[in-house]
Amino acid sequence: MYYQKKVWTRRFQRVYQQFVQLVADEKRYADPALSANTVAQLMHLSPTYVTTLLKAETGDSLHVLIAKVRVREACSMLRHARCAAWSTEEIGLRCGFASRQVFHKTFKRHTGVTPLQFRRMTDEMYRQYLQNPPEGVAGLAVSSGVSDNKYP
Image 1 (tube, helix red, strand yellow):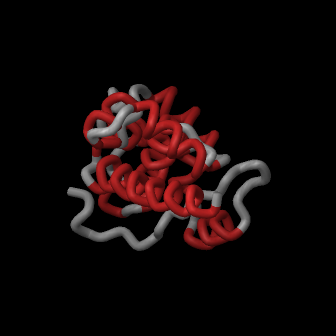
Image 2: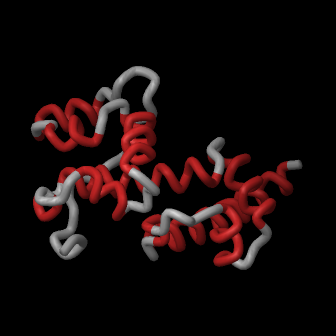
């Protein structure tokens, strides 16, 4: 049994790294049509295998993991000075959300605040938010140091 768990964990780590590279690093999250089938196909694995493995190890479905990546990117853009001229709707669309409504609903579900409230946070409010996320909301590890080359 220990051996099976060790093998499962190694498989998970490999698949999870591949998922992160594909979705986050290669910015595939920006495609609103990104689905479990697309991700699995790009990873050259079966959709059932990928979704089962990620769900078993993270507790989240592939759809939720993609949404988390999109929300993290939106948080980063909302806090970055170079993106200040962009509307929250534009940021949501750039992050792969299909519409403004879906972006606002998903963002609030994951962060506990609306995108506009998040954008308007002062640095002190932001630090407090990261230290004490609202009750019932899984706080996001959003980095405040964004590379200047990341956004046009």
